[in-house]
Image 1 (cartoon, helix red, strand yellow):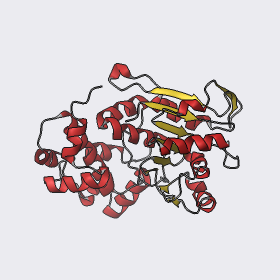
Image 2 (image 1 turned 180 degrees about the horizontal axis):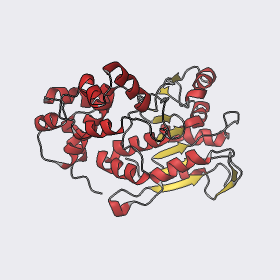
Image 3 (image 1 turned 120 degrees about the vertical axis):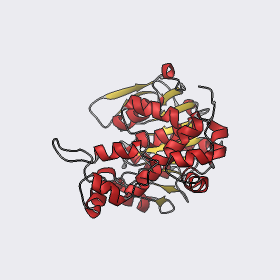
Length: 317
């Protein structure tokens, strides 16, 4: 369970990626029932730390802040820089004692230097995935995903994918409802699956352009229905082939995978908050039967619906 988060930085840190981690774990949202994390920013040498932008940071804490942290995060850093040896030792120590480490974007190169990617599936920004694989040949680099949760080592792709990784960890430890509250405050989607493609053809939509927003909203409100590509395409006034192509361009995934992610997410909320049986939840979420729900739930989350309910139901804030 994540209660203490330390962000380790050194000269050349990227402010945006640092801000992503800070926004997810460093903001007090206790007024909304969200847990408050013991949040720290630390550096191998406390004091002035330069950034990749034309301003510096003042970081008063040293790496002792990582000693009892449940999660130690590394933002994007310059790939050409050699991480301080004491930072690499600190990261290895976190994993050795059972803690978790996370990188955002090129922070994965720091984890690689620490040897923490060896034999593990991982990712980074798609522009630097080949370089990561070349520099750390024992790492199992996947360039096509938003983030990878390899147990104690979590890596994410560029910029906003760090938000997805942070929300994933919050969801894993505190449930879908808490993650949704954090996402709502950050004004971001509550859940983008880690396996979703990094590259979306139209992430910024021009004004007065037809998009699938209305169809996506309708899909979210009718998860219990049999939503075929043909049905959705007709609603969007497109051919099935054009609809499938447009859907991937706008969301980075297929209609089937998008629906599965939303249905599992809805099942999580119902398991946490309601009294419906697994069979009833399966029908309400569009899975039809409890067996189908269990299959997809276990495949995506690594646990059964009943075990998830026992863990997260009536959880104290």
